[in-house]
Image 1 (cartoon, rainbow, N blue to C red):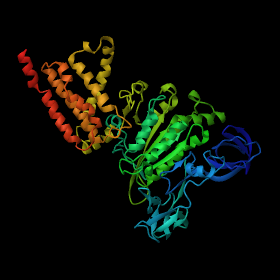
Image 2: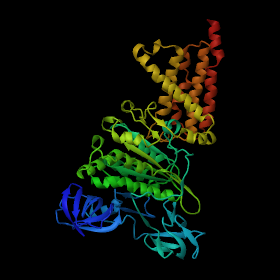
Image 3: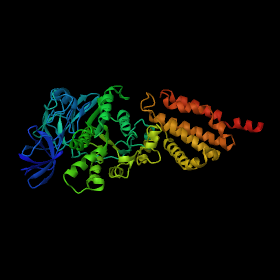
Image 4: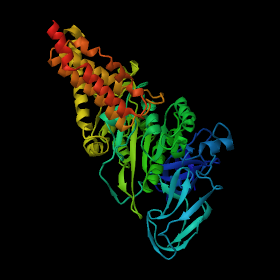
Amino acid sequence: MGELARISGPLIVGKGMKGSTINEVVKVGDGGLLGEIIALEGDEASIQVYEDTSGLKPGDRIERTGAPLQVELGPGLLSTVFDGIQRPLYVIREKSGDFIKRGVYVPPLDRKKKWKFTPSAHAKKGGKTAAGDVLGVVQEMDLEHKVLVPPKFGGKIDKLGGEGEYKVDEEIAVIAGKSVSLMQKWPVRAARPYKEKKRFEVPLVTGRRILDTFFPIAKGGTAAIPGGFGTGKTVTQQDLAKYADADVIVYIGCGERGNEMTEVLTQFPELVDPKTQKPLMNRTVLIANTSNMPVAAREASIYTGITIAEYYRDMGYDVALMADSTSRWAEAMREISGRMEEMPGEEGYPAYLGRKLAEFYERSGRVECLGSPSRVGSISVVGAVSPPGGDISEPVSQGTLRITKAFWALDSNLARRRHYPAINWLKSYSLYLDDVSDYYAKNVSPEFMPLRAKAMEILQKEAELQAIVQLVGPDALPDRERLVLDAAKMIREDFLQQHSFEEIDCYTSLKKQFLLLKIIMHYYDKANAALSLDAPLDKIVSISEKREIAGLKRAPEQGFDKRISELERSIDAALAPKNFQKKQAAE
């Protein structure tokens, strides 16, 4: 037991704390406010408190718990909304009203609800087991929740409960003399172990055409979305959470404005999962830590989210984690660091900012899980960065870019022109193209990557021509270069631009993406061939088939390939050489 000596906002200093350990959780004052020890010197401990410290005074008692900040992992996580330290917000509201009272604590997992447990066929009393082995399953929403032997456990199964209903804290097995329940705890700042990391092979299909076709992210990969205010970071991440090809979604609202988190909390329960046609919340965990909530809990929220994601990864599932935004997380670290009077780094951020960012993103990956039966799981991490004024030369953006392998650069000019997603195709990049190219070739078409490269070449050529166009206008360009501008406009408006709230256009399958880009490039190739026969450009670009191409992104998936084939024949007929040869002969 120690006592409070000094207070500086969310940071307090306790004395008489000899024997404490770094990252140990303590309870402060009569209200039992939760805090975490982040520095020790002699018998004094620096503690970041996860709640409002107003009302605390020197001399208040500090009680040690002997454990680090941990999360509870078990059935009941899905469809729940937690704060940064895993307090269930809806349950707390029932207990304390719309405003969370200080010191209130509710167990993250419901202790009253019973779950039907079915033992695994290979787990038997008297048999041997190891860390990560599947003891049985519980049906959680639409997901088969695998009950795992906790890490660092293993040995002879002394007792194994039969099929039946259990509460999360009830014993279902005894392994080597240690009790095992449906629930396990894990310290948030320690990565959960796995057998080995696997190479990237499969893309995380998002339904966003500019991402899946031009700048894909692999399952288990990392991506950064930096952009200034109003460029669409939050909307893009919400779209990824809605439509990404993942079994489980973990969405962390870290330091975001309250109205944005309100939109997430009200929209997600009403959204329908396009894969299962059931509520999207059935496979989602939300962590809400808005900008007006305690800054220390914001710093912890990122770790809470990634630990929950690792738990579902260990079951062999693909998890997509959205962190919005890591800039607010870094600002929380900067505030705590400043109150501790640490030597500041660039722009006042702590000198260890780069290490902290790397520790977080390195917990992503596609891995072979511990235990049997053999299974592979992944965590894909997409982090939004909110640089002041949109300047990505600041430390958080640069630190993130050094770690992540996909960079989706949001552009304020595109946002002002109402081009969504406002991702700049010339500044963005993905280092996963080689990893997923075989998947695209086998599952979509061998032409997918060559077609993508050709489209990017046209967009880059358009950017080079823009300088001339701004000086002398497009009419001064040769016909072939004017055709490049026409094709680039079609790629931008008919392919890259996508409506987030339109029933059909909000999600595009890989097959439809390929066919949509293919028909645009087919038009471009036929138009080029017609130009070679001295056909007038005005006649080429005014064919009616172009209007049909423009409406294709809103066409339903059913029968789309047939419609593309018909349109290809129509373009071939409209731009056939005989049409222009007759005209030339007449002239």
